[in-house]
Length: 83
Image 1 (cartoon, helix red, strand yellow):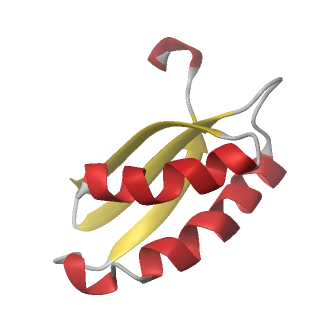
Image 2 (cartoon, rainbow, N blue to C red; image 1 turned 90 degrees about the vertical axis):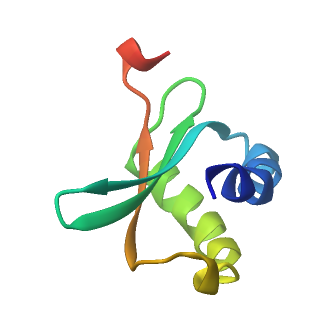
């Protein structure tokens, strides 16, 4: 699933100068998360995350039936140690 989501959102994000670093669908506790880690020069701020979310949401809504469980979309920046 991670690769499918990546293939759908990577190019639209690139068009707005946002680099896609990682996509993962994970269960943490009782919740599932579709975590999208992004990067942008010179930095990622809240507005960048909001913009990325606005691009990603309509795209992944087309995959709604492919996710086994309900999930939370988590768009975040990568931490310095994650590079």
